Image (cartoon, rainbow, N blue to C red; front, side, top):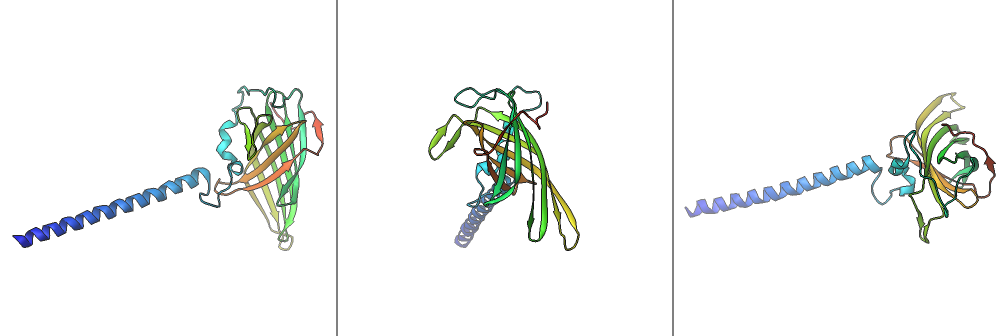
Length: 225
């Protein structure tokens, strides 16, 4: 009888350990699924993450639908009384990557294009893109120095194509994906912005531009109704 009780206690102990082990495995599986889900929604997770500014799809809800009324800016944010366009050199890691043109219209719409061509690893890369979106007065600029309510945010989305030509083999390949152009309008029509390209939101390349010292073009060329 005593032996049976000891055996029963041992079995209960083993069952308890099995339950604990099963719980630990379940928690581990849930954590893995959680981080996989984050990767699907927001791209790579971990210490090498890109900043939120480099994942503009997180702000895509700020792009209004066709026919929607866009809330217009008031001082201290710059007002857009007349349509105008800005043009800027696009840079990546200190190297020029073509030019971007962005049109702003009084109704709050924003549209433009980015084109560039360059040689890399003895191959010619040619990018073409168009994008459209709008301003958003609800977003406030902030950095290490604090908030700056005088800057006006804009966000756009579109499509890009990349043609890669190998002059040695004569082979040509074409890639395509999504382009986001975001930034801040401030002062006398100065713009600081980012161009982000991606195919599936698990990776992205980001380019920067500024128009502070470049020409502002009166009138709009790209914006459509």
